[in-house]
Length: 110
Image (tube, rainbow, N blue to C red; front, side, top):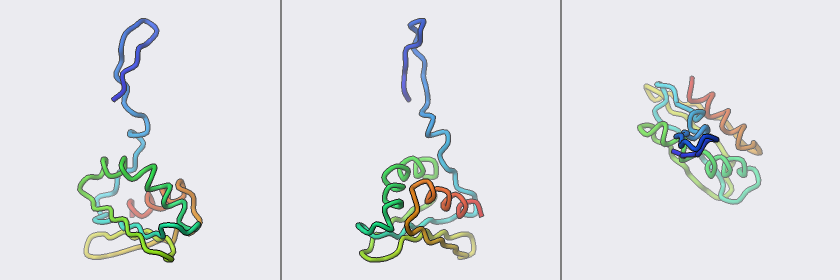
């Protein structure tokens, strides 16, 4: 929480606006796996996504495992596991952090 002083000298509590817009996973999603390369340019958007969004998304979805797997030379890919072992994946090579977030949102709401 952030406390700020308004023009009248009163302190107000302001919640982080970004936190209110954080992705909440759908009820069918049981696990999210993120595969990426530690240093390839194709994985840069995924690395940026993890750096900027991982903690806030995990705080909003504490009961859903989010696994990050790094392996040299692999193409970045997002895997979603649902009820009854059903899985879906999307290749996110050369995507921006925002595009990665959009793909995760689509996978999480299936």
